[in-house]
Each structure stands twice: as structure tokens, then as C-alpha cells.
Image 1 (cartoon, rainbow, N blue to C red):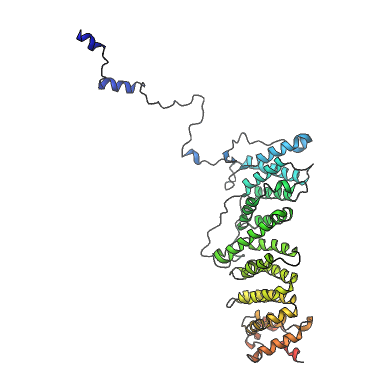
Image 2: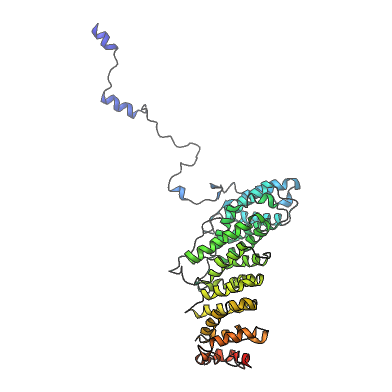
Length: 450
């Protein structure tokens, strides 16, 4: 009886049977899946995940799936808007251009498609609809907004870059980038682009990222960006104050923090056209921009890279409002170079242009510090600073200058240094100075006293 009861109880498995069960596949742990019998790809590993592949919207693109679409001319007019969007989506694929042999066929398909899109936008058959506008801005964003890679420069962050010695970095993907920029330029400039719709996608975030690209090392890209930003400023009036403020912030960071930026000249060139279009009387906002951003741009050591554009902007302000001449001249005197002779020559040339637009009342306000600075320039040992200061700025009275003011200016200087009327004899020994001043008296201030 007891044996029958014990026989019905479950037996405790032995170690040997436990071992057999674990090896027979009846364990509760899921077994490794068998390899696919249809020849599918193995699961991704760290090794094969590093292989570069073209991407669209962040997902790999199959080379077999990347095929050219039909041409617009071979498509009925009613189907062209949809074909346009398909072609734009095709151009969202991003390729690695560091290796010219990789995805060569796909790269050529994309380039030809971009050229087709440029031609289509340049010769539209009607208004661009919102889906097309949205897709264009998305495709442009995927292609041009990228990290900018600058070559290492040895301790040149605060030094003036030598444009002739420092070779600009040319982007290997430029043939494709150029087509994208050209497409976006035609898109912004096209009368068939509705600004009210496009401003939803060309928004403040887009403009900021566009401005970030001005620091590109490639001058070809900066030239396109300059033209595009100017078009954006003209087409989207609602963005104008924001664009000016964003440019101000770039200048502030450049002046007071980094002193390094590749696109200051291009930004100033855009501002030159903007300032030329300012309505009169000038707003207080524009005057503050002159005082806080443009005049301090004379401070960085690399001012030679953008001085021509800066001088044009400064002169535009003085021509718009002659009362700003005193502010500008005193600003130039504040940042006047002390030991850099070539920079001093640039300042003298800019000062000459400002004085040509200066009225007598404004000249009187800054006359004393100005003549004291000119006095130092007259005694400069630099062979270019001497003839510039003596021959062109204040002493050239043949172009109907305020002779009385120059008289008073000279009388202010003579008691301190009577040699000023004779010029700098050491500088006159220089052959370049002798040739530049040949036939002229050493200092034409003598005419004032006749």
C-alpha cells in the first residue's frame, strides 16, 4: 500500500538526466535562430555597420533602387508637378564625396536631376504649390546644412590671415552643392514662388543655419550664400529685422570673442546694399548698428580682409546723415593703429572718403583730435603714410575745402611742432615718396597762408 502511494509521487530528476535534458534542446531558454535559408543578410554588426552608404532622410539608399526618373519633356504637363516632387525627393540622398569612385553612377544621376530641377524652376509653367515649396526647402536643408570642417591653423586665431599664403579649402562635393545652391537661388528669385507660403519653411531657423554657412572656407560657397541671403532679404520683408540682428550677433562674436570668421567681407557687402536702401531719417536702430558693430570692426587685426567693404558701409552712413561724421571720425581715431603702418594707410584712405562727405559744422566738432592725429602721421617714417597724409587728406585744398578750417587746424599744430610744414625729411629720402610728391611742395599747407 505504502509502495503504491510512493510510486505515484513525482520523482526528483537526477544530475545525469538534467544534463541530458539541457543538451537535448528541451530547455526553456530560446535557442539561437538558424541562419536564413533564403540567403538574406546577416544581422548588422559593428564591423559592417561602418560601411558608408548613401542616405536619404537618414536611411540607407539601395543602389539598385536609385534610378533616374523620366525627363520633364517626356512627361505630360498634368503629371509634371508630381514628377517634380519625386525628383526633389531623389536629390535628398547624401553621398560621400571624399572618395570619387564610390557611388559614381548614383552621384551622376543626382547631378543630372539637380540640373533638370534648376531648369524647371527657372522656366516654371505656373505657381509653385505648397508641397513643392516644402520639399525644395527640405532637400536644400539636407544637402547644404552640414558641419563645416576647417583645416588646422597654427595659432592664427588672433592673427591676420594672409589670403595669398593660406589656400582656401575647396569642398569636394561642390559640383553637387553648386547645383543645390543654384536651384535654391532660382527658387527664391522666381516670381512664381509665393513669399507668404515660402516664409513658413524659409523661417528664422533656416536663416540662422544659412548664416552659419558664411564661415565656410570655400569662397565659391560664400559667394552663392551672399547672393542668396540678399535675395531672401529682399523677398521676405518679415525676416529683415531678424536678419540684421543675426548679422549683428555674428559681428559681436567676431569682434569681442573669436576674431576669426571667413565671411565678414561677404556679410558687409550685403549690408552695403541694405544701408544704401535705408529710408531717411535714419532709425535709431541703424545708428546703434553703426556705433556698436561697424565702427568696432576696425579693431581686429585681420581688418585688411574686409576693410574695403567696411569702408563702403561707413561712407554710406555719412552720406545718408552728415551728422554722423563726427561719430565716425572719432570712432576711427579711437581704433587708430599705433604700430601697424599698413593698417594706418588703410585708415587714412577711409578717413579721406569720410571727410569728402563731411559738412563744415561736423568737421569743427572733431577738428582738434583729427589734426593731432594727422600731425603724427605727417611725422610717420612709413613711406606710404607720409604722402597719403600730406597729399590727399587735409592739405589738398584744390577741391573747394573749408580753407578757414584747415587754417585753424594748422595753427593748432604749428606751435606744437613747426616741422609739420616742412614734412618729414627722413621719409622724403624714400624713392617712392619722392616720386609721389614730385612737383609738389613738401607740404601744401603753405597755400593756406598766401
